[in-house]
Image (cartoon, rainbow, N blue to C red; front, side, top):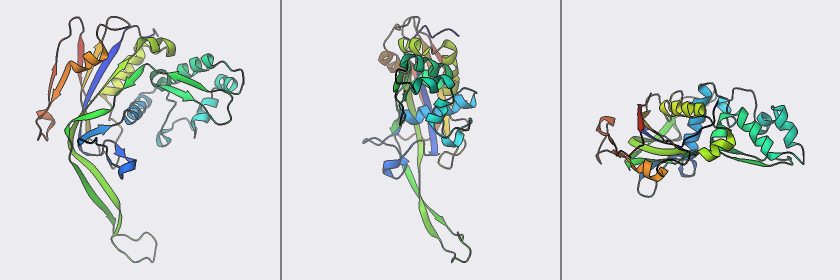
Length: 282
């Protein structure tokens, strides 16, 4: 596989309909909002979903969710030590950190894409890998309305207990919102992690199908939907334009009181010599 030889920028627009796209644990798991009331989805949350999709597509992932771990390992340390070369290097006080990073990137897609810090208790070696794929948090196009619902139970938890309607907690959801996030792939860092052109295509596929196999009680099937993915491929390593200018060339608009995805409009301002590919979400 050839290392990525040209800069790539991308943008993703998705909708949330009666769902909690990213709960804030410091605020009772309410959907994240900024001070102006716009909805937010953190870059960490987005990378988690991308990792899950890549895992579903058959890629080897280092930072796996406990409920989706498919290799039997219970910790990152166990997963790293399962690779004999890495175990040997990280237990050596004079271990080669560059060699460690190279082997880790070869083994796991998310390490060569997003980077990773390898620093485990008791190890004599600490290794940091910078990945070429950077992603911004997703921000809603308009302020979002949040509905909170009290959850109760009316069954016996233990035999003999008196049946009663006891409060169990609260559920929160965004009634309707359209979010946008952008990102880039840096070729200089891609050379260091050997992130390839084929890897970029797999990342694009993960973005297009971002919410497949992602359902939960907070995000029922169909409540989160990728609407559009825009993909810019430059003709050089440094790119013809800055990422900021490329991302600004996409205008996504919706009426203030919109409640349907059909009310969302898209427009890309053409940048000379730079072609943009547009994909509908799956």
